[in-house]
Image (cartoon, rainbow, N blue to C red):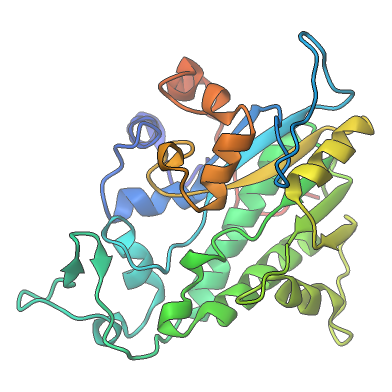
Length: 307
């Protein structure tokens, strides 16, 4: 966790409460963007539905770690209200307000848009996206992870297409991870792979391709980067079989509970990872008591790059 976000014993207790799904809307929920939960987590099925065969007591040449991290939520929900008020400059014009000045809610959860296009605070958003990326990389590097497999964190329904900022948020996300990788001198991580399946609408591959392949500002980082229109599990399993320790990103949310709506076969990547890995056994607080053991929480200084 980011050392300047969860400070002292009070900060640890807030984090512990949040990992039980008890984070309060607003500021506490917003802090969850600066937490990374990791655990060795076997993959039991690829996204094409093929089961990964495995014998009892068998181990892969390389371990796979699931790396759960929260993205910025521009889907405008009450629990993540601070993401709206922090990053959208004209949020009071973008969403309907009650007479009290509070946002009007649909079904007690969703902000009601007015149809106005949002004005994003790009500098603030980019700063926090870089802090989030640096935290993920530092955590995995310290664990000895060699191959990082990232999906597009927060770039699905959270990206803000409904208020006109989706493509801008995607561009900033790609820029953030590129700049962090250029600044960092990672010791264990030897390769970063972005798993970016191309779908007909709101795909992320082109944004990352432009960011890393820009001829005027080419990628200059020391860590090799690969962009792949491919199943993230397939990439992780291949790297693991080759003997590498692998970190696979799980796009989580601010409620802090692994898998969130997995019981309903929810449509998000987080729910799919809950159904295709052993993450419910390794990262859910109701199953693994270590999730709530504060002695296992490690503070990370995200203010400076490693060298």
